[in-house]
Image (tube, rainbow, N blue to C red; front, side):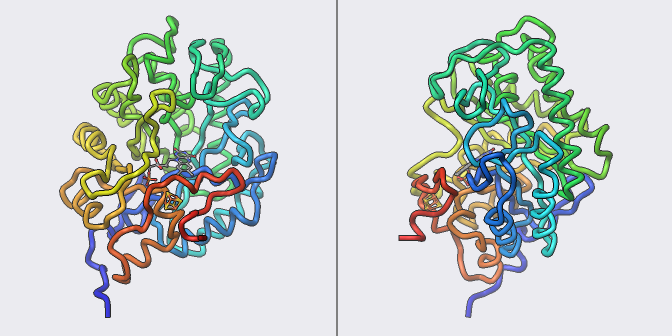
Amino acid sequence: MNDKNTASILLTPIDVGRVTVPNRFVRSATNDYMAKDDGSITDRQVGLFEELAEGEVGLIITGHAYVQPSGKASPRQIAIHDDRFVPGLARIAEAVHKHPSKIFIQLAHAGRQTKKKDCGSVPVSPSAVYDPSSRSMPREMTPAEVKNLIHDFIAAARRVRWAGFDGVQVHAAHGYLLSSFLSPHTNRRRDEWGGPLENRARVVVEIIRGIKDATGPDFPVIAKLNSTDFLERGLTPGESVEISRILDAEGLDAIEVSGGMTEAGKGSVWQGLRSEDQEGYFVENAAAIKKAVHIPVSGLGGIRTLAVAEKFVSESWVDMISMSRPFIRDPHLVHRFREGEVTSSECISCNKCFNPRGIRCAEVDV
Ligand SMILES: Cc1cc2nc3c(=O)[nH]c(=O)nc-3n(C[C@H](O)[C@H](O)[C@H](O)COP(=O)(O)O)c2cc1C
Ligand code: SF4
């Protein structure tokens, strides 16, 4: 008989704002490519999220949902730019809430990392800086468009609350639009939205302030933040610490620390991880942020071994453990860990789960 892991620090609750998450496991946002063509929710997605909740994931974060049609990154991505999407989304919240898990929606705009064929218009960016990864030359946003973007993030967060979700995550990582405002590589503006760090962070600050005003103190607002772009002129770990301080002071409720930009040749989803010392590739950056803020910080990047996760939390590198691919491999990983059935994920970080017809682990199905 296996020993149960009921005493693990990973299974203790944590408050994110005024919401209590039952354990330290976060399903990091994962675009599932399962929505309908117009971005509305399918039965398959309701099933996916319910299974993660059955599997006892403490906090589930949906894949990035686009707050404006121009911010759509891929086919079959979740949309949240209109009230008509609320009833479908509400089905997900209802299914998850049959269990103790909490669920947030990740709000996003793809910025320059999309194509006209996917988003229906010339991609937009803080500045017109060519993106070699999507091979698109974006159009610089006007100041009125920046204001409109802030408005639409806030309107989307209101919909998240109407749909019965527990909170929102603002996507400010991976080179998408908000991350590209933070990065000096992609933000070369000379107005109030560009230049010094406070200006580059202004759009995220105004979105967080606006969401807080619109949804009230009971509704947590968290952010996923790049800690480095891996680009010579890009955002540095030191700057990400400063940004985290600013967002903490604005009332942000937690930070999930990631990194990478596709054009750097080093994104956020690393392949070929083979040993425990490769696990948690953004956790050192997360630990630096944790030292600077008063809110929970979640670490991620190839975490697979539960003893490693436990070390990160018990030694206060981070407060929570985010994973994506291990939950594609096995949505019941947390339950099986608690029952003492597993000590690590079987995910081999091959990235074959990126399936435009719906994520699935290629290693399990063969
Ligand atoms: C199929 C897939 C889709 C993803 N979609 C998103 C997304 O919508 N938003 C996001 O912030 N990160 C996304 N990510 C990145 C993950 O959230 C996570 O940061 C990254 O995979 C590293 O964690 P892991 O090693 O546990 O997979 C995605 C990753 C995968 C594998
Ligand atoms: S296909 Fe399966 S094993 Fe490979 S990265 Fe995805 S979840 Fe992990």
